Length: 124
Length: 248
Image 1 (tube, rainbow over the protein chains, first blue to last red):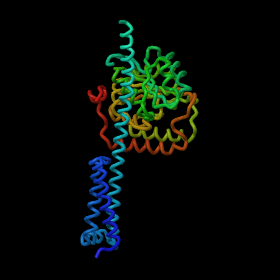
Image 2 (image 1 turned 120 degrees about the vertical axis):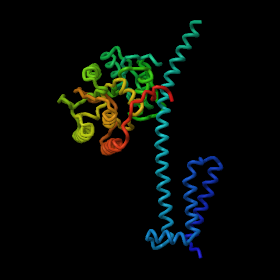
Image 3 (image 1 turned 45 degrees about the vertical axis):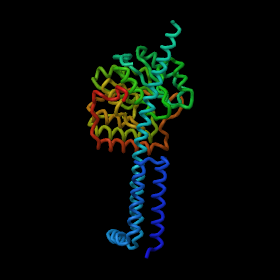
Image 4 (image 1 turned 135 degrees about the vertical axis):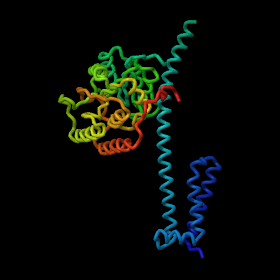
């Protein structure tokens, strides 16, 4: 007999799974950034639909109320996901910096070239 | 662009909203080191810093957005490396650094054989007044830096510095982020560069305000110390022949 908490968890996980797949389908989420989300929803689905497994996990963590174990697991996944995105932001920042630096130097070079071409046209 | 500055000196002036003081700084640099080239890195300024620099006939590098002091400086090092400059001097755009002392920095490069020469406000008592809290921070950073480098540094936060080609190469490739000065001293020493300090006299700023406000001091200290400590966990950078000297 499924209790209401588990039903809510199942519903939430299914919604998450469908949303992530739909976002990838519409190309609003890249595959590589969807993997952690898919993994999270699948893990919730497995734990929520398999009471024996969830009880086992709860006992191993000394958690009296098994559905709480489910939320501990979800919380851990969310921590991993946010940390992962912090590293992605750091990488994007570094790449953005390099691009800006290259662009500043290129802009100078293009200006120099423009001036040279300009002189050329005046001379001929 | 490869041989434009062969063996010559480039003065790097990072500038973010410094329209008030930039002209005066550039004039003083020109008087002090007439043979040197000057590059202003306009760090995404909202004011007329960019057009002021263009109007003065110096090389102006315009960053499309504001990278902060470290990213702006590194742009200058990258430009110096690609143009083949043999020596770089870092001079602030706010008038704090005294361009008349640039020849002393450059002479010290030769005299001491160091790869980096830092102009220190505190090596000699020259009447530079630092607010007490900031002075305390600098003393702590100087102590940490000296301890790690096993060499005495009195002013690791000073940005008034001269660099030879080895140092230019390292900076173009491995410059620290955000508040780079103290961290870069540790980086230089760990990479095997020789760093020397000479006494300088700094001015109060002409205009604008320090990039480090009083309220941000705690964050500054924490960030810099964290960066230095975590930096020690990394392998020291090596000076590779192929780095950012060519566009990647």
